[in-house]
Length: 267
Image: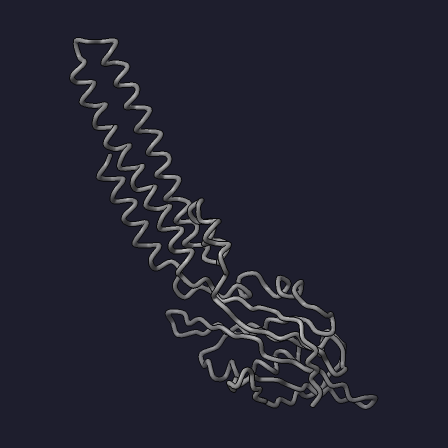
């Protein structure tokens, strides 16, 4: 019993060390609606464009076309998207930020929509196929648009640390669902092992008192289950400590932070 418990928990710890690597950003997991609720204005909306192909460079080159198709269908117009990349200075550091203008022309009018690339992410399958996600903030109407300020972060503050008193909850909060599930499962296995071993230890001790003739045999079995119980307690406690430390020091999945601003795009 003790050996199997140690093997299970050792495998769980080893798996958890890898479970947080390469996870999809929070906005990919939850979708754009989770971000739309964070806007300070409805002058724009978040839109995720998803595409697949063999060339990552081509997918990036074509992402604006896919966004323009969406904007055209949403507003029942057609036209050609024209892009322009600009750089902005923040606290003395230059950050390259892609901002786009999409011009839709027809015989009646020319409509201009604005968009900015907030974040992107890609995965490559074993056969070399890429899946590419691009997150845009795009004008709701064909007018100069006031966007909030966007940034990305893997920090979630102190909240996950407090939550991780229950193993796995803090990891779930940070978007590390696989790791969170493994931790919760490990804690459940540990708690189950504690109850199982203690109940059998108590039962054998009761038999030792009721059947003195076999007392030594029952006491030996009770001692073995006591050892198993203590191992389960130690392993579960270690898991709880690991959960808290992991929540404190390990970056969570990348998320987008939305800060209200009065920046209006007009170019």
